[in-house]
Length: 173
Ligand SMILES: [Zn+2]
Image (cartoon, rainbow, N blue to C red; front, side, top):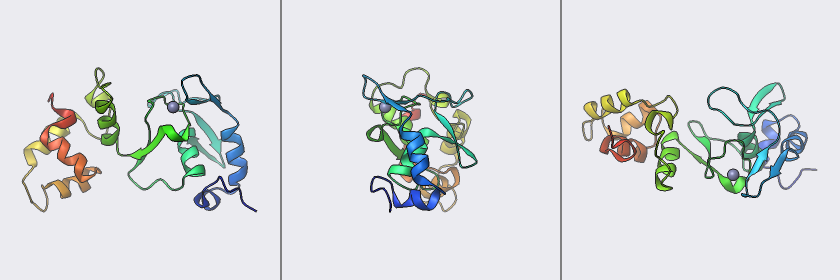
């Protein structure tokens, strides 16, 4: 017997998916703003504010647990991001998969990219120094310094790398 609400991936990923789901979902509390906030421990080092839970021998972020349980696998290089920008939120409609760049673009699109922006918004993956180096290296269609090659090297989508090269989210550099 399996719970139809849970992803088939969850049954492979967790030893006891239903127990994990019960522990996670029972401690998300609906707020008046529509978010479902984690009522347990929060991460107290960067990135701050995410819910955390000890799960089958690992410490896991609760919004990632929600994704694994209800949607499925998180592909390599992608993060579970918040449309609502509320780190402890585990409301599924508020979550989406993307790169750190997608996250920055999402914030820009919502007009909430002023300050902190740039380095503070991204993970440590891409710093102003790296952005400048990428722009200096860029050669159209180059096998090593083209959009596709550098996207692979830095772990971004090609769309993301194009935005880095052309300015986009980093236009102030
Ligand atoms: Zn939310």
